[in-house]
Length: 418
Image (tube, rainbow, N blue to C red; front, side):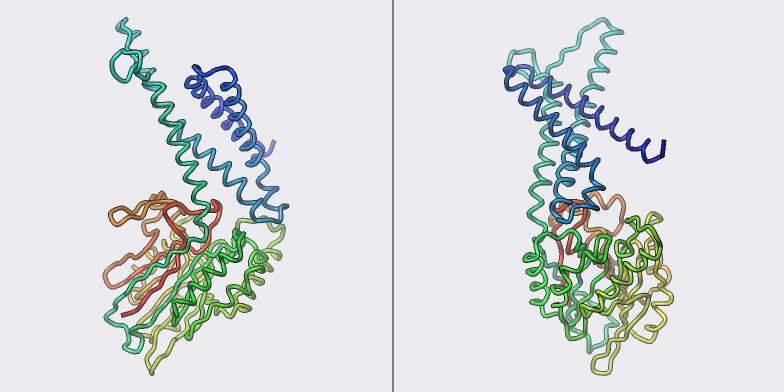
């Protein structure tokens, strides 16, 4: 028996045990309903459980055989949402079971009976068990509903405007407007018209320079073909420059041969050229205005996290920009900033990254900024500073995996150098 088969059997066993455990809780809170309602609830629960298992099991087939992005993305997203809701609900059920286990132990050793009511002993109180079960089901249902609501935010682009000041910025570049976009993930798009609106929003900002910081596709260059004409509309007087992200190399697909994988990358590089974007592959360009210079550096994907492959060479990319008094680096993964840029290249003034998407889920309020991704990335969205150096992490133009956004909206970044 192969390792994959063993993992699959263990996963299916886990899902079945999870469903049985949750079903016991549902039986508890529905015990007072009439038989017809109970049968309907039980049928609906097991039907959704069977559908979840089927969709997750056949996800690789959907990914490789179904041509419509919507049919590849939405069923899996809904079923994973159900699974997340179940796991959250179970955390409350476990609390109740542990509470009852402690009560049982106390009564066993003392010979006393412990009441199971939230307060008092009246007929209208709800048992602690029922309270925790309903709370768990409520939290799980709320999260699932929130994830469904987030589908409508796929293209709810938010323009983040900021003014950045640098003491060594050449006078000719003061007032320069840079628009950054990142993580297009064209393989996830299902609505061309909404993508067009996003591109029009970028051009409406009248940028002097447009910078794209990686992940044009999910895996395959072919995903970009329906959108090449749309993104080729991006124009700026000083040009459109781009870099590669971790998804652009096709690392998450089984290609059969290394040659096929390389052909995919070569095709993707050609698409950048076809759109009129200057792809920087570990290289620099010098931007000139009124006789003054700015260095623009672009590296292939470099990560400070071991689970992501690093392809880039910053030393090589930096070499041709040494004479420029002000430097901007495009590096897809923000963990690169702490791992190499800050300690080794203190004269790189501004680094632009993406990659995290803000996990497409979180909270951004004037007094609270939170996302689960912050447990993995120190810099995950917005502006960060270390002495004279700045890092900006774009929240992503597109989406991947979960086809939506909750709290962390797709981003177009507008930076004015002042």
